[in-house]
Length: 83
Image (cartoon, rainbow, N blue to C red; front, side):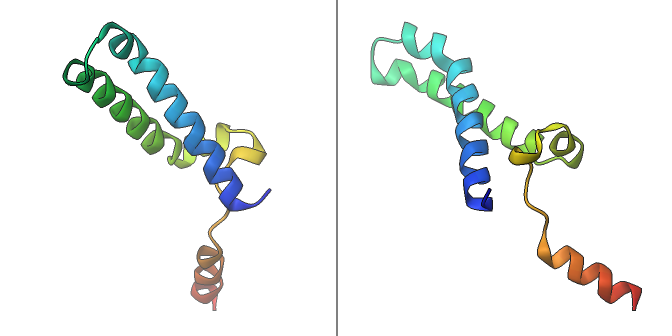
């Protein structure tokens, strides 16, 4: 699976969970100004999930197809340090 596909799936999952958390506020709001807190909660949850999923410990818990791709620069740097 390409790295761009992985990133798209991860972002979609994070955003969906954020919207799910904010859905009660969004549904109960009848107008745009009143829906603003719901949108804020959704964005905050999505941002929090993004940060958590970026942690190496959490990344190791994800299925292989959803893990972040290895950093090609890190491998080059490791080889350079060994030499």
